[in-house]
Image (cartoon, rainbow, N blue to C red; front, side):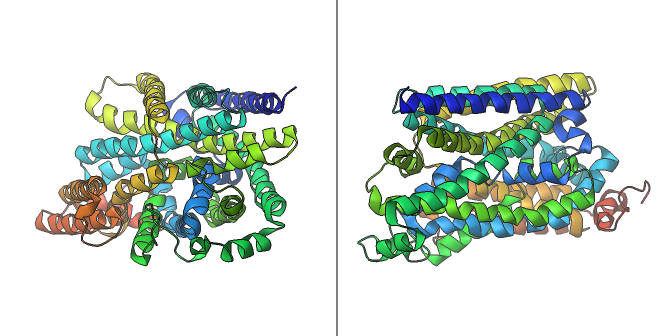
Length: 500
């Protein structure tokens, strides 16, 4: 049996195991929207840890991260930098959100904000924003699955077939089990890809350069030494300015825990202690990104000229003499990284689109059963849309992700104000969000208009805060009955007591 055949058989076995692992948990949750979206608020630390960690260990970690290390050098440390700071706000916001969710029945981020600001426009706008931001993130995961299966099969499996096979499996267990299927497959996939990450990161530098230290020494002594000069290169291959690098880290850090699929896990936690412990432990996932970046650095001198850079990992695997079984397990690990993020994103995007976009406009006749069915229909629709873009576009994986962060970061002022600023109003929240998104989108589409080389999200946040504060102060204060539960939610048990 040829090497590529063995590799594909192992990947197929992995897909079957993921399918089984994803379908079974759905039998243990209630047949309600709360069961499908929030897992009946019963996730323990282990499952929460891997569900949240999957947002880091995705296609961009296994493919885009090494691609940046290979083509942009130290710029790849951006991934670790924002990941370290990005979960800190959730330590403070998460328990508050969970208490309020238990009291009011919230299962999405926009439900909380729409209630706090008494503004249906916030709900609908956040639904549109969330789905729009999720599409490129989901495209990223599908492209990653297609890449790996195409390269390791030496082109015999086209990218469109690889993406279709992997996300056909994801579609089945997301439709069947909802968030619990996502949680348990993420746990299975997380353990698997951690082992793969360390094996790749230590073995490939050893095979190609004699070790990690020798690898970096060789790069320093070569014509590519500029790749090891912080903060690395920008997307045009020029030295990245510290202003551009720092603003990218800041925007990504601010936007990180504002991603609706991460924020929503606050509602799924079994307890506040489980949630806080998960947030504290979450930073350990960054440790597993380090060896993955080593793989990209290992290819700089050994395999120059690989394009697109995002394919450097499968390219190295196709050239290095490894046993077929090992290659198959590694490729399955990369698939795990893609699917463990894609399933969470797909589930969250459909849940938010229906719960926050369609439901507020549908009226009283939209009952629990209809809502759950509509979420499942939207799962299929969003899968098809993302698949269309995944097989029909050529763009850097991290460029997709970095572009989405600017929009998601605009949610941060609204969440912060909801919990800490009684004077915030619904008109202010809506104005801030609209202004921030408009500015961010303008500079994303026309980057030459930016006065300084900062991430477009920084300009959006500046306009967002000015509009949010200004309009809030210029409009009538909201009644205390609206904001007091949110401000007092910081005190244990306060939000659960009716009438506070």
